[in-house]
Length: 568
Image (cartoon, rainbow, N blue to C red; front, side):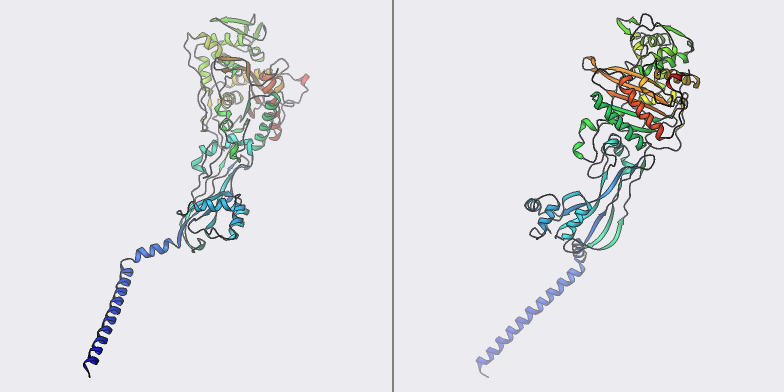
């Protein structure tokens, strides 16, 4: 073998050894890497794989339903859908993207621009609270990256009729006003969590396991009777329109249990339309707006006088000449009523008679009675924004303030407080706590005045509805009614406003065996009619008359008007 051949063979052997060495090194490297991935990086890689296939999704839960006392739905969570997109996975050139945009109420270009701006994100809402039919059409288009999930939207079947009472929720289902806010903890629902397997397009392939169960909200049954609520709202709306008033409120209580059967306000708003929710319309005037109750407090003044023992049913007060001077102020009646018995002070609504009674009593007598019947502090119903009213504590020397207190000036109440204060007159002297929730067993009542005196005052208040009284238009055919009118000047920045009034009527029916206590308040009626007996009393008559018939309350006065005799 020549030297050249030998060198050639050696060269070939060296190159083969080099190639085999390289291959062996590569094999060892691959083997080492496989061992490293399996031993050291296994958990990391598995997690990365799972992150691209396993997902924890929310299982929607519905908010608790609110019903009236008869089970009629007042607030429900209706099924809707949420449409969202994974910008990184979205196919913005898909042929069906234009159809998706139309279903969402936008254009293809706007949708593409919106999603393109969030390309670095993995989640973005396209539209929430979409109707189920529309959402299903979007789902059927199967555009990669666009997903549809079930959700719930709060819906109020009664619309504006009970909006001030119920309030509303935000888009996330949290209470913002009214009972939705005050009972948020009970009504709130907690979504569940579920582990699912998804494909590369984000579609759910398999449900793996439940991580946590969905917790549905508790249902809430109110004391409200929606039949009566509709009736009250209709009458308030008609009256505000007819008298060109600023607003009106009505509160109706069950005389025996203290449950709120109706609480209506006008103007109102539609809670199903977010555009209607402006600050000037959403407050519940029945529990937030304060006013001086005026002559509706005179029955309490007479009750305090009878409870003092200084006066009886036959006592007479001389109101001549129909006015009196006190600390530089003139207190007037509508005319000179002369001598009035105790009943006549209520029948004629005599300011002079009320003042003479109040100033003859121990200084704290009337204040204590008003405080005991709930004036000056909140009712305890737990409604957001409820006002406590004002009942000033007066020194013995504040004679003028004690005088005006006797006919309902110098203190302030809400419509609900005023209705609550009439419960003892309807319930033979006992006070039952008011409630917005239906209750099978009311809280124990508290006696605030002797039963004979409460019955006597109720009988006196029946004369207000007679031909001689100021509340004739509150009469209800077939039923005996006890009530009291009130008309007060509105308060402005510089004191009382001469040509603006609040018209009030507070009443009890049927007077022989009371079932309901109702207060009507009309704010600033315009026109010649502005007295409580002209504006508020007719609303009471129509609303309570309809209520007694709806509740099948038997008539207690079937005599013709000219035959009716008011019992004292």
